[in-house]
Amino acid sequence: MSRLRIFEEEHPDQPVVVARTLEEISRELQPIGVAFERWDAAQQVKAGDAPEAIMAAYKADIDRLVADRGFRTVDVVSIAPDNPNRAEMRKKFLDEHFHKEDEVRFFVDGSGLFTLHVDGRVYEMLCEAGDLIAVPDGMTHWFDMGPDPSFVAIRFFTEPDGWVGHFTGTDIAQRFPRFEVGQARDA
Ligand SMILES: CSCCC(=O)/C(O)=C/O
Ligand SMILES: [Fe+2]
Ligand code: NI
Image 1 (cartoon, rainbow, N blue to C red):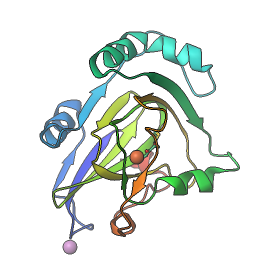
Image 2 (tube, helix red, strand yellow):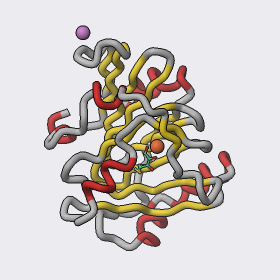
Image 3 (cartoon, rainbow, N blue to C red):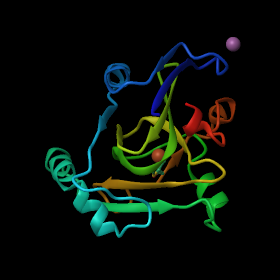
Image 4 (cartoon, protein in one colour):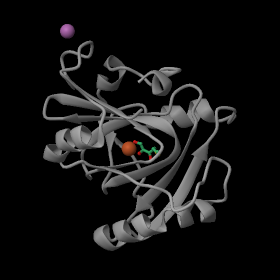
C-alpha cells in the first residue's frame, strides 16, 4: 500500500505525519509542489510485458502529461530481484541529489522509495503500482529500490541528460529509513 511519512529532519525516528490515501498524500505533497496521481491501466500489464504494451495500457494519461508538461522522451525501466547489477543500480541514487528537470515516474508494477528533503522536513514516499510522482527540478531527494529491487516504471524526460543526478554531498540520506525487505508488503 502506498504510504507517505513526513519527518522533521532532526528526527528520523518519529514521523509527524503518516498518509495512505490518494487524497491525504496529495494534500500533503501539493504545498511543496510535488504532484501525486493514481492511474488505471486500460488493459492489464505486468513485469515482463513489452514496453510498447505497457505504454499502450497508459496511453491516455501519458499523452495528457506529455501535452501538459512538454516531455520529449518517455521510456520504460524494469528491474528484477535477480538482476546481477542490482547493488550498483541501487547505489546510484541512494544519496541526496537533484536534477535539472522535473523527475516524473509512474510505477506500473513493484515499488520504490522516494525521499524528498524540503525546508527542514523529509517526505518519504513509498510508491507502489499505479502511483505517479512528479518531483520538481532542483528539489533535493534520494531513491531506494531496496536490496531485492522489483519494479517497472515509466519515465518522462525533457532533455537527454535529464536523469543525471547532481549530488549535494550531505549524509542526510544515511540517517533516514532505507527501503527494507517486506516494507512494501507491510506498509
Ligand atoms: C523509478 S526510477 C528512479 C531512479 C531515478 O531515476 C532517480 O533519479 C531517482 O532519484
Ligand atoms: Fe532522482
Ligand atoms: Ni527523535
